[in-house]
Image (tube, rainbow, N blue to C red; front, side, top):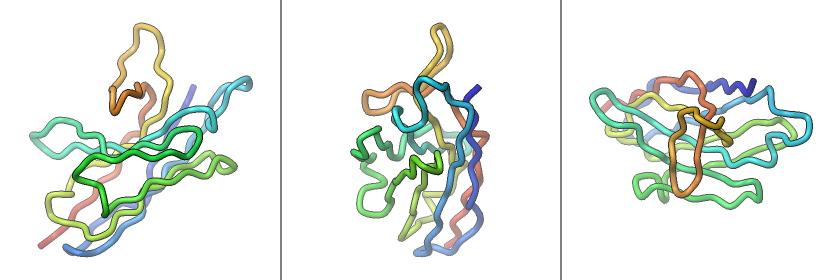
Length: 131
């Protein structure tokens, strides 16, 4: 079973930076982490889940408008990990942040973001940005 675990969240003042990490495991022998798109998402209280950024197996990145110019997604296939560098943080960035991975299981739940379907999710980590 694919598992994802986030780390690196916390509290920071407006304008500050945080770097989130996501360690993954449990992929299949015939096709592993490096073959899937992975991404970062967030959900603030009372709001819907929002896609932030994704990176595909070739290292091509895509961002939501809210993240462009401030956030950078990256991956390390050897470590089966992905990262999100967040700079110039604003109070509106306060949310629970989740990492996620393709694929999704037939009949299972998934979240579609920029044309990719993410079926495996981490538990999330809180990011709080104060004024």
